[in-house]
Image (cartoon, rainbow, N blue to C red; front, side, top):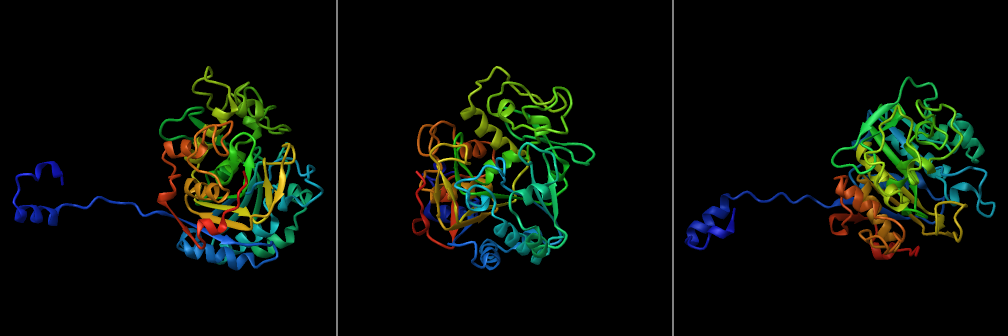
Length: 376
């Protein structure tokens, strides 16, 4: 009802009009579950199950469905911090992976796949996990017959799947990815609570950068067709735009645009999240690092925030996680963690992926102030 035209109405007419006027639809705040967890020896399965229960239940999301879980195994497993296990610094911890798999299995998931585009190799994911110190028997016991797939190249799959970016992309109009990301009902990003040298934070959204196959977007990708035996990262193609991806994939919208990684990477991450939506975001902050994303960053330090974070919208989940790290999730470039980059949460918000506004987020389990752990 337009209230500009009520000036000359009687009280009776006004009340009658208000009685039939449709109420504006106000979306409910997006729920994000947060729990305190001090050790990987705690009952992670029960804790994660309770987090799902607080946002509507795991069965509602995965029962009878194929679930694909993107791990966070950034950088070579040979690079360690003070000789510590990778899972307590910058990798997905094998115990959280097993606990999540068990919850999904108990909730009725028909098929569970763990995936990652492994650093500088197209070899089997199970070998990469063994090299990373994982006990695969633990994972198999948690979810019998779970699959492990390295998506850095086709690795026996027939062809790549094309994911178009909806709305108004800035860097690429579409991305060619391993078909496992298409052939799934539920897509999970399993991330660490960390800073990132380029994008400020690396959480559920930034973890998805790792779905890009190095065969196409790697520094040694084939100029015309994918290189199915890649041995390098994606710095030249994605971060700096020094060259394009393989010609088999969609090329940049504007090759003359700035080559600044702080501009490119937030947009590429947002585009990937819009093109291949994340259905469940899980962030492990029990033990992690601050000051960067891996051992190659100077000035990193070991931290123990003692947190687990779970949500169904990646922007809202990352916004809650960013706030729990002591930052403003809507901070512009040059402020908070986004010292050298545009804010990828706002870029994803621009593409309609979700809201980074804390007033639109319902944090459940603990109060934000009670779980705050300042990374800055």
